[in-house]
Amino acid sequence: MNFSSRLLEDAVAEFAKLPGVGQKTALRLVLHLLNQDKSDVEKFSATISKLRNEIQFCRVCLNLSDHPVCEICSSPKRDHTLICVVEDTRDVMAIENTNQYNGVYHVLGGLISPMDGIGPSDLEVDSLLDRLKENDVKEIIFALSATMEGDTTIFYLDKRLKSFNITISTIARGIAFGGELEYVDEITLGRSIATRVPYTNSVSR
Image 1 (cartoon, rainbow, N blue to C red):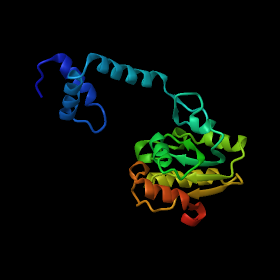
Image 2 (cartoon, rainbow, N blue to C red):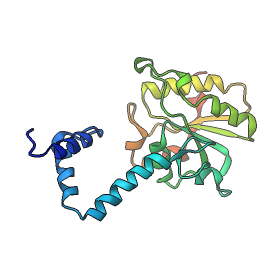
Image 3 (tube, rainbow, N blue to C red):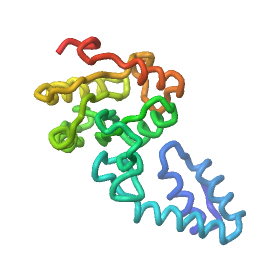
Image 4 (cartoon, helix red, strand yellow):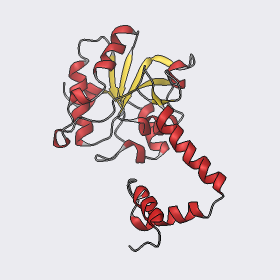
């Protein structure tokens, strides 16, 4: 792709680094910004910079947050005896959109995937165990994607949680195997949370 401006080329190259954005789409986005008022572009730039510099990980659940403790963990209206274990922030958002869950979360930050070099030590497993030791938790719900990586992670966590006197359940498999949570429609995901089943019923311990 030939550019008439080095500044334009550099901007397109940066946008093209975003997932799912090719050069043509990046060029369209950059040209769109050039057609906007300078104040709008400056606000856009400032918002992205502020996001990167100021966003935090909740010190309780590891979800993205504006504050040291996120709004979900700090809410007295949530059931803090119920923890839903998810892969990342996108899954928290997906479950929250169902309006079917009133507990709190724990964000692992990924799934066990030996092929990608991701092991248990790369995930927020120890912080989950610490929460169980320090708080009165009655149930853990595994809400991980219905993939080989998700099932491997659930199997590992179940073994680590055996010593705790808590109920361990997993979302009902209204979700097809291979499906990622963030792409499941809200009705199906909501029903999967509401009709969760004991983990021992889904796989032998």
